[in-house]
Length: 425
Image 1 (cartoon, rainbow, N blue to C red):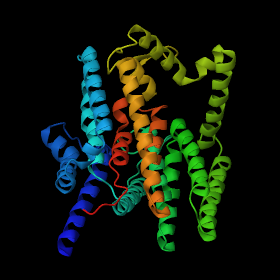
Image 2: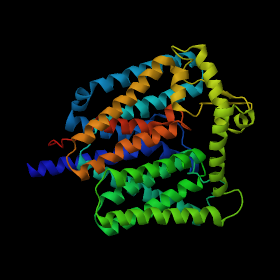
Image 3: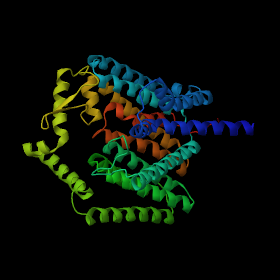
Image 4: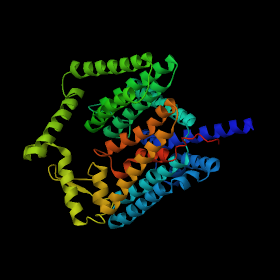
């Protein structure tokens, strides 16, 4: 019996590792695609992208069946209805290659990602290991990037980016890694592990910052402040734990300040000052309706065009895959840099209402699970999942398109299927 339990734990660990890989597989594929040309074909899709996902799914279904689906049928039905609405809306723009590509990504990584996260049935022990896997991935990626820069002359240029990706997605990915390291920092006991987590935090935050995405940096700072407030307000800590966490934040603040003010030119400091300037101009536009402020804020022109499109068909939307015209720059964009607005415009009030209901249901589920967890340590481990959910949701309000925000869906599924009772396997 004990041998069988150990085997099952090993198999579940393999499934969880495959799950982490699956979430990162589009990024891993883009890195390989930067060095060698990889044609889009059945083998690439099944083996490189979805193969590990199918392994995870098979293991989860074998171990748990559809228990989570039955227990959370309301949320599953919401996701199903939302999928149908997005599919139906895409028919209006079916001749667009962008629509077809985005739809494939939504089905394979967003909605299937939710179901895979739901099927995982994470427990406290496996959630702890899941966090460690993210730290290992972050460390490997940091080593890879460092070697590429030092030995292979990979150019950072004005904005750092992962090979094959853009600076905004690079920034938000490394900031996510930094929070994975922070969660591990506050949950592990051995000081050597904490030191490793601190190093991963600093390195990840560094790469996130030099990507110089204003959206990613703004979301990172807001969430870092929120993380600190939650840690010192809701979780009990010993004096040593408080001291170590405060020391980590102070060292990071001092390092960041030195980096901002020691280098001249159009660098990271410029991006920070630009964030402050944009915030000031946004307030000026809201209060006074200043046309100069309107022209200087890149998102406003897109949002205005999105609102104009919404008025054309407010109930059913203008269709998934619609392009947006930037009136100031006189060019088309594939999305309005706001996932909430994109749902409203492309799927109408129907799709928007379903998406909003989905978020509220996930929030309610997260609160329910948190309150049912009995130990302080268990609550700390679970905190990572709703934190990651909101981290990517907030960023998607400034950058991601619907189909690009797949991390959000995976974590929504993990929250929904979280086994707070830690029932036997």
